[in-house]
Image (cartoon, rainbow, N blue to C red; front, side, top):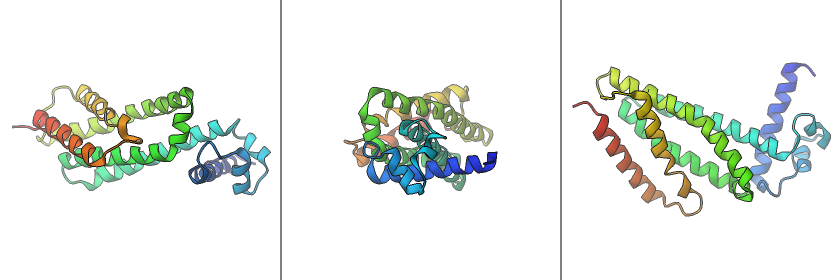
Length: 195
């Protein structure tokens, strides 16, 4: 199998594994289930991955990559910088809720798995800061925002958004969270909008 075919098959494994895990849940899914869905022998999976945890880690990373594309599309559709920030924040929370509900059995199983999720999320934090920084910089350039230190402001804003992630799993009240996010946006805009 050449390099391209090897990578294509690896992607096929991840796509199929994601579907199987969503259907049965992480705990109930076995390597045999994934192999059966691929119509291949289980040994073909071990050529690419050592266990289902490694497969799941890659599934999570690919889902986060898909989120980045979705967030960027949402941002691009908004004509104003304020609209871009608002759309990003509100959609971000909904997408993270969806991911958490989908994968809660994996997350709750052990501290190591939760640590893995946090590690992956922290890798994405840098990307979020970059996205928000770009919007803030555009707002400053357009004369809409007045921000002295874009990088620090973006980092602080992303950190504030993280506070809304932790209660989101089982007890989330979407209406309350939406109201609180609205308040966070009001605070942000009252602090950075040019006067």
